[in-house]
Image (tube, rainbow, N blue to C red; front, side, top):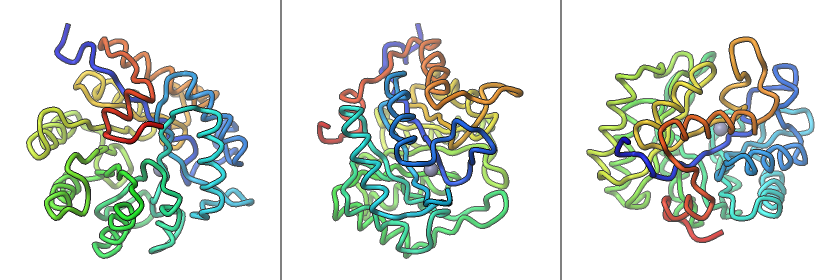
Length: 281
Ligand SMILES: [Zn+2]
């Protein structure tokens, strides 16, 4: 038994994202009703956080608060207690439109705190926009999930904590394996883990996401190191090299197995809320 045995493991499912299409994988939920159904299956499989993007009628990413509102309402209705995390990521809109849905007061939202390259463009997160998004989250009582695409982003989160821009127990997610950004390298992962513990304390919860073929590998690393897991079709559309994932739930099932290999029970939504310091759902 390792020292992480018995420690509940939160599984976040990133259901849709901004990029994948039905042509890539027909299981990618695009309409709000598909998203709610796919989230419900993932919830039944063990996910307690739903990381959400919305698409417009043409399937393009949008930050439309009305759509986010309908999705959040549907998830809350069909998946009792599940934590809805809305994306303020950069592909869906420019500048402050990225935070237009925060007034819906979701329990969580993603917050990128620095810039880096993506496969074909710059993922632009200028300091004034980061400050504004964090202030909006504070105003509306939304807990940020800090997206760390780089080691410097973890330090930036610490700086923001010291300036009370974010709460005292930030939840950092490492994102590894995006082309042109930080690769999924175990040595780097270990440094990330050490850094969050050095900066925020030994009992701070954290999460890791591996993109594409790195998803399962990073799930395994995070489960073994006492972290929490992210999966879903946003990050990866395959269950192995040649097979498309039939659903978000199928990817959640793989994450559950990774957790179980390290004797980690799957966190219920109520446990996840407690770990993250969120109000009861
Ligand atoms: Zn996302």
